[in-house]
Amino acid sequence: MLDVHILCVGKLKEKFYTEAAAEYVKRLGGYCRLTLTELPEERLPKSPSRAQIDVALEKEAAAVRAKLPPNSSLVALCVEGKPCSSEDLAKLVSDWSLSSARHLVFLIGSSYGLHPSLKAQAWVKLSMSPMTFPHHLARVMLLEQVYRAFKINEGSDYHK
Image 1 (cartoon, rainbow, N blue to C red):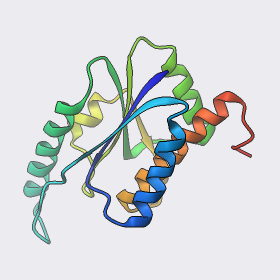
Image 2 (tube, rainbow, N blue to C red; image 1 turned 135 degrees about the vertical axis):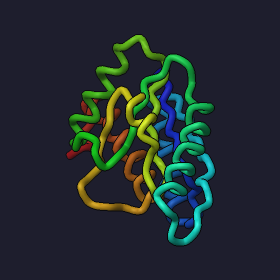
Image 3 (tube, one colour; image 1 turned 90 degrees about the horizontal axis):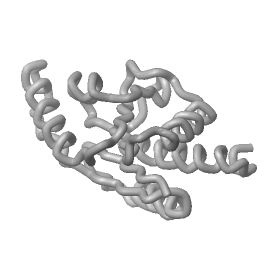
Image 4 (cartoon, helix red, strand yellow; image 1 turned 180 degrees about the vertical axis):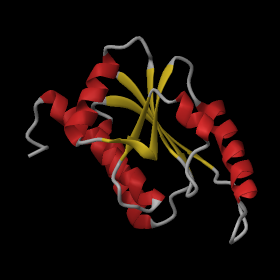
């Protein structure tokens, strides 16, 4: 069984997001060993300077690196990433399952994104959409898409 990790900077607060995320975590249990880790988002003033944002992103990057399992492939979700269809994600998961890496790690950054060093470290950079979504919704969307990828790879009609 594959080891899939989802690292998220920021905590889910709204009940409807936590319930939706929990449903997909439960569904994924039949397909992979899923670990979902929330890391705290650095506190910033209401209108932070670029320097303050950069310092916060560096601190968040250090926290992310501390949670990355050894021998892992990092998938960074970022606006400049490659757009990815559900079929593309299923192929990525399938290709990764044949690699020597033991852990597949999806990373969702804070509201200011990810530190450039994390993006550079990524095996793959993905964009969920050119549209902007709340980070909490992005987590639910990612969980559903990872579940959909497993269903596509098994030949299920869930994707229809």
